[in-house]
Image (cartoon, rainbow, N blue to C red; front, side, top):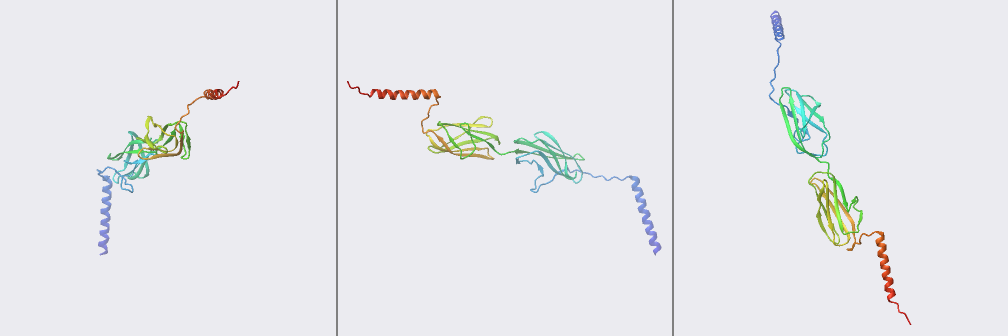
Length: 272
């Protein structure tokens, strides 16, 4: 019995050896058929893990990122485009089968932009992501009253005219922009500023009464609001002194003095 078992083991070994020898001579090749393109990895919210993402409003864009997954064939290239300008992405984290690809790009300017990302695997199957995004740095700028920059709500603005010019100069933000001035005091009202130069909005208000006014200056671009309230804007009491030079004021003073002397002279009584 043991002899038979030994012969069977020897026979099995011979058969395995023969199969191995034949397989080696045939140079067997494993062929994988891949008909599935790469896919985008998903973020925690279930959406494609790409940056910048479609519909995003973000303050800064200086790179393109994309998570790409392809278990069958390795990803060989990922290319991004912002507004048509191409940037090749390099493998940043992970592997060619499951990794994050990234490209550093010049700082993208404020405004609306397009994004396209295309991933290609080693059998030339591709997937493409397209969208648009907005770079928004926040609204900022300076308010002026009669060319006096307003920097503090407690700032006292004392004018010698009832005609007041308001101006807002925008340094950051997106269009369209609405600027308004509202006032309360001896009178109340509101006026919208108009564009006079790019990023400059102006309006002039002719007040009918002097006194102390509270001014609320508002700039609104739909995403952010810049408001400045001035609690002490003083206007003259209804009578505007003309803008005269020193010689003119001296002339007026001499004429008034001469008139006084003349009146006194006419009032004298001479006894004979």
